[in-house]
Length: 278
Image 1: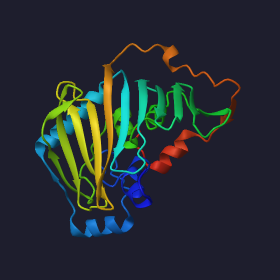
Image 2: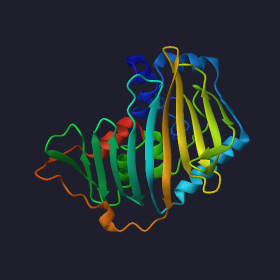
Image 3: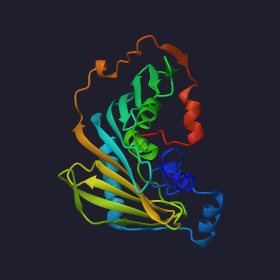
Image 4: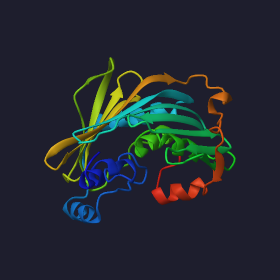
């Protein structure tokens, strides 16, 4: 995987609120404090192309209109010495049901389920046990927490809340512009490129379906130790508003595994400053 420096700079964006802020309702960032202060003193606004803004807004509308969804997410790293790829099956049904089953090339597997009453997690490091969080009635948070196990947390937040862009962007963002069109697995896409001011932050490229306006690929790129490192999430086999019965979200414990109660998920969400409103 990435070196310690590269992991903080690139893959760290997968687990902490991101400095680019376009995917957050409140624009919370994860850039180092010194970088944020220097950027804030240098400039107070980013250049946002009107076509890029429109495309991001259209993507938000597309996700907010979904009643249910299923698909596959493939994560890959390039430009790293020990890159591990991961493939994840994802399904959700509003307001609070979701399931994620993931496996990486090292042989590790993850399974997460929200059945509307409880969240269940089976992690590779857990031996003969699984974790359960009890949900309050109607709590929509569960969908985000499940999806965040399958993809970049800010994309999970966008999928679950339908919000991908905050305005104005934080000072760490230099520009948000329309990129060149292309294809992802044969699907025509339009792209939006989010360029940071600091080389310590990754550049984000969103490839958005031309017809359905759903995310087809997210790419984060960054120079690490003089080499280009990239993290790519490709969304495929997408089904829009599929019929997903309750049995889709039934959790079956591993044979012989014991249940471990975990802290309420609301505390975790507040700590991460994750957007929860639709």
